[in-house]
Image 1: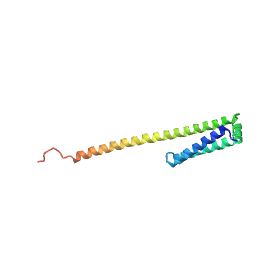
Image 2: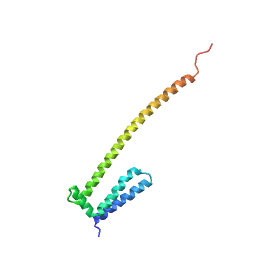
Image 3: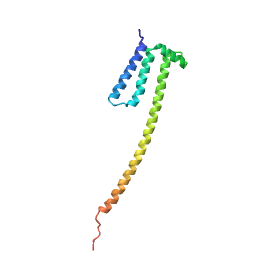
Image 4: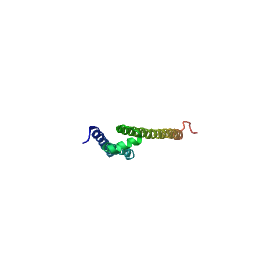
Length: 129
């Protein structure tokens, strides 16, 4: 018989799995980012469903209480995810700055060209002899 903790863990992992698949289907989450979340859900299902595996993993990690090992693994995943998205945001910030600078240069060039062409297009106010 499955105890409440295992059932709750597996239920939460299945909910995560379904949520990720639905977000990918609606194109709210890219496939490349969904793989990590799907792997996390599958890992939680495996570890919560197989207490012997969780106990063995916690022993390898030097943790005496197996559910704590699951929490440490989850925390490690969150740290890695945060690091990944921080590098992504940094790269996008640099790209955004470069695009803004290029756009400012292009606006200046267009402004210079329109000022120059409007001086040529305007008839002179001098009288011709």
